[in-house]
Length: 286
Image (tube, rainbow, N blue to C red; front, side):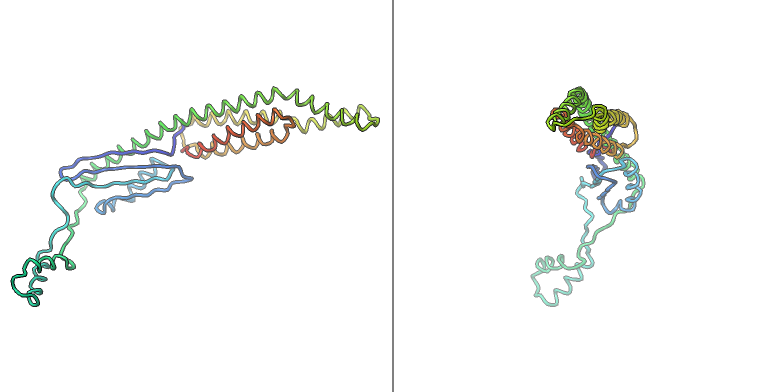
C-alpha cells in the first residue's frame, strides 16, 4: 500500500512543572530533508533523534519541533545578587543618598546582573519524552497512510481512464488503416500513371507496418498493470512509480505520432492529460 510524504503528527506530555509538545510536519521532497528544533537541554540527544526520525519517515521535507511550556511560576532566570550589590556599591560613590531605587534599576540592567541556571538532562524524563516522540511519529505515519489511501483511489481512477481511452483508440484502428489506404489510392489515381499493383501492395504493407500501434498498445497495457502491482508493495515505491510513468509517457507519445487519425489523436491527448495528473500526485508518494 502506498504512503504519502505529506503528513502531520502531534503529541503532548504534562510533567509536574512543564508541558512537552512535539510536532512533526512532512512535505514531499526528492530525498530526506530533516530540520529539528528542540530546547538546548535536549541537544545532546539530537543526533540519535535524527537517526530515529529518518528511519521511520524515510523521505520528505520534515520539520521536527519539540518545545516546552512552563506551567509553574519557576523561572530559569535568576538575579545574580552579589553582582547587583557590587554595582550598587559602586553607584553610591557617584550618586547621592536617597536614590537607592534608581540605583537598583540601573544595577539590574548592568551586564551579568541576571544569570541563567542551566538544567541538566534527566534520563528518566527523557525516556518519558521519547514515548511522546514515538506517539507523534505514529500519528504522522497514520496521517501518511490515510493520504496514501486517497492517492491510491486517484491512481486507480486515472489508470482506468487511460485504459478506457486506449481501448477506444484501438477500436478506431481499422478505420484509421482504411483511411490511410484510401488516401494513398486516391493519390496514385490522381497521378494518372500506371502502377504495378504487386509493388503497390508491398509498399503499402511496409508503410502500414511503420504505422502499426500494436507494440505500443501492448507495452502501455503492461506499464499500466505494473504500476498497479507496484502500488501494492509495502516498500517505499514513489521513485519506481515515477519511472513507470515516464515509460507510459513514451508509449503514449509514440502512439500519438503514429495515429494519423483525428479521433485517435484526440484520445491520445486525453491519455496524456490523465498521465500528467498521475505524475503530479506521484511526487507525493513515499
